[in-house]
Image (cartoon, rainbow, N blue to C red):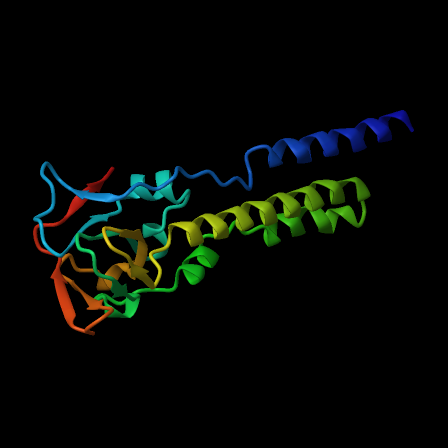
Length: 205
C-alpha cells in the first residue's frame, strides 16, 4: 500500500516537472523602424520599414513566424505636417495576412500532450492533474500571445499632425518583396500620396 502511494506521488512530481518548461510566452516591447545611419528623407509623410529575421521574431513576437510561413515587417509612418492622413492596410501593395490568423498559428498546442496525460489518467487518476495544469497554462500563454500580437499590429488609422503610425504586418513568406508601395490618403482633399519602399529599409530603434 505504501509503495502505491509513493508511485502516485512520483507520477505527480514527474508530470509537473515536465510542465516547468512548457506553455510560456515572453516577448520584448516593440520599437519603431528607423532608416540605417541617417534620418529618413524629409517629406510631408516619411516612412521606414524593417524586415524581421528569425532572431527578431523570437525577440519581439516570442515565436518563429518565419517557420510558419509568415514574414513579419515593422512599418513606421510619420506625418510631418499639420494635416491629417488616412492609412489602411489594403493600401499596401503587398498581400497581408490578418494578425489574428497568424496568432492562432503561433498558439501552443496541448491536445496531444493532454491526451498523453489524460488517457493513462483513466487508470491512474493522479495523471489528470498535470493534464489540467498544462491546459490552463497553455490557455494563459495563448491569451498573452493574442493580446501582444494585437498591440503590435499596424492597424487602419487616422494619422494626426506630426503623428506616427507604427506596427507589424504579416506577409506570406513566398509572396514577400522588398519593392512595395503604400498609398496614404489626405483626409481633407482625398488626394493620394504614394510612398515607395526603396532606400527606406531600416532597423528597430
